Image (tube, rainbow, N blue to C red; front, top):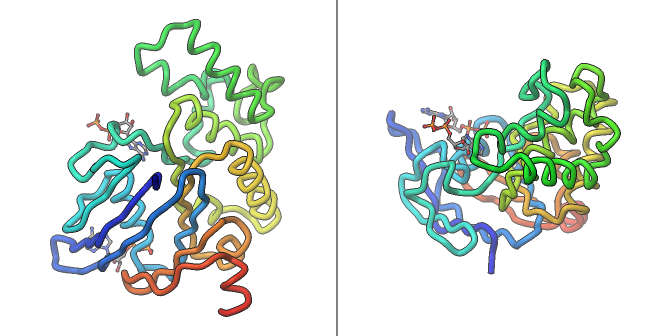
Length: 226
Ligand code: ADP
Ligand code: ADP
């Protein structure tokens, strides 16, 4: 069963602008899918419809086999992975990762177990007492992912997470995200306008142009047949 299924998804904004046109796509469990295309092609709109932050004008969206068109973001069990700026500077790594659980009715013991488990997966165990300011860019990235992991989300969604970083850090983060995604095996949808990210990160690349899917291929296929 596909983790995420889009069937003839359309988005027409209030002003009549048709931003996403008849997009159909099956994303497999554990797959890393890149949505790529120039600015304005509808990538963010599509991602926001998956998360539930934007209504779908027509079409059907399934997550884990269940129709989610009418479901609020909190009921979709997805996690948008925010970057550095979304970490709380005054909280430790432990508390930053624990944050989503503090909002729910999770017991202290379970919070502790889940945070430690995530920290182990992310190799953050010895940094749990530190503050974000004292971490490297890669470590901060891992804390952001840790937060998504403790929620036991069904999929990670990234929206141009590296676009504000310098080239060196961007390269490091690419490697880091790719390594972690493989290790965690969690379904991932990653939006970018960067060709290098598109060609190096994912299992499959979806090329969007003016709201239409132009091509769906593996990076290798795109490389051999651009
Ligand atoms: P991308 O993420 O690929 O840069 P977006 O999904 O943000 O593209 O936007 C796709 C198109 O939809 C753009 O032409 C944009 O101007 C338009 N758009 C985005 N949000 C709105 C809105 N709220 N109302 C009208 N048009 C919008
Ligand atoms: P409200 O204030 O109406 O409760 P929010 O927009 O604060 O709604 O979001 C409620 C829930 O939706 C959050 O607790 C979270 O689980 C989920 N959510 C909101 N935004 C996102 C996002 N970008 N990625 C994943 N889940 C989100």
